[in-house]
Image (cartoon, rainbow, N blue to C red):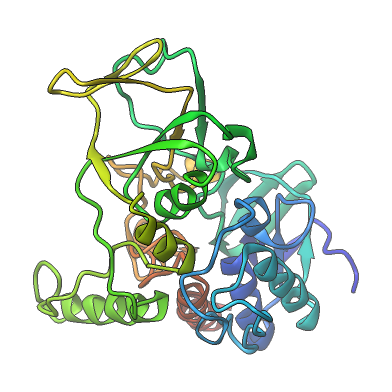
Length: 359
């Protein structure tokens, strides 16, 4: 396959992870000329950067991209990050998707009837752009008093690969989501850990996994579209910690007991609102991410909370732009593998109809 060169295309996809590949699959079927620009040096998206022991929240059979089911991983109920990287790599090759990497897109600008996609490898011009850059390159650390005076190590989820560097240390793990629970589960095997969360963590029933959560998110979105408020009248809450095997084992060891979040950090540790103080060698911030949208800044679309207003995946202020893979605001569970596929299908269908109506 020839390397896609800068030039004019019907569609440019920015990002070659799971959401970008899903968009590429449907674009390949649409007949529209397209290219996928990926900042990574190799296939696999953000999965190649996750910690070694990460597990998917769903079995392989419930985590497919469109067209090809993820193969099972021998000996693993929930696939590892390495298995997902191999799947995405094979998926890209299987469908001969026109990915060019490494290409770092720096800006998307209006250029008359087209959008100009500027990068360190040249400028592509497109009738439509799909942004699928995800969140991994924008880790979020909340502000707490004393964060700048703490003398120990401070890492975010993006920095963590394995527990060895923390062996024998006292570690404060901050955050109440799945990442915090999975990392705490293995970190507690080699270190003395304290888990601090803003609100009590909510563990899902043992038989609930990512597929159940995706279905719940889909039902909620449909209910809201029909005019219901809150959870859409479904009574369901798709958020929560999935009890994958390592988390279940940690629960049995009694280490998944969360403390209320501390009031401030000190040079040696942390102090809680009641005056209780503990010393720590390290703080691990499992506090999430923000969408990577800097390349879209020239379009002037971001609202007061940093998001771009969308109707489905389409920007309401710039209809030539679609966003896929950033979370529920761009499609039900669109940051998951299966959810990215469904959001990409909708985006490409809308793009195809719009371009054919205005040749």
